[in-house]
Image (cartoon, rainbow, N blue to C red; front, side):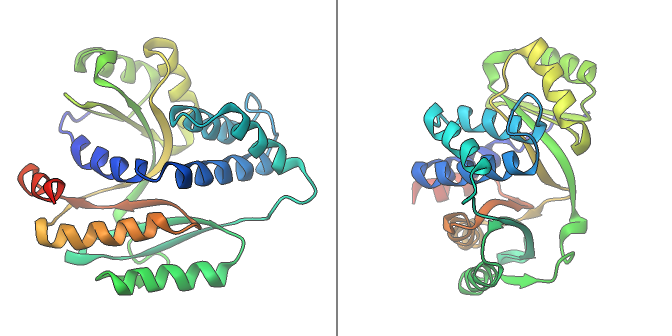
Length: 249
């Protein structure tokens, strides 16, 4: 297991997402509805729905919103969403995976392609960058939960694959198929996690400077602002100094 952390880069990205709270709630609602429709509408019987509900709660989404999203899946007028993955490159050769839930494939494809082209990127074919990422589970905890040794011990006991700890918090990785079991075991030993998500984890990171990073973040912001886009995964790495420059702008 590794101890090196990219937590600041990850939290910077999530901090940008948090600025649009209402849009975030909309995306969370869509994921809950799709999860409920894909299986039982009971979180205790549907692992995907349980993850979606728990993440909605971690983002302070109101209980009424969560219940409405679940009920929507069982109604006769519930929308049918297709799950689509787009792949491409951003400024500086950074690899990007975009996950979308859409009721109109043509609209979604056109919008994502336009966003890439307008912001220094290029949309590729499916599989063009996917081989650079691993499908994994990601479980995060705040730093206050304990020191690195405590979290490492709990992660090993729970069957996790890797841990990254820093003063900002802990990120625990596991095999995608084991996400529910590992997160449940960790909750028993460490308490409720901050977030639990299936992710695309980059195998290697591509360094970018502040100039390329500024354009990259515009691309990421535009993608995340699209109503059909649920998640954006990027294999960039930026120094603390360059990150600080961008934060000041």
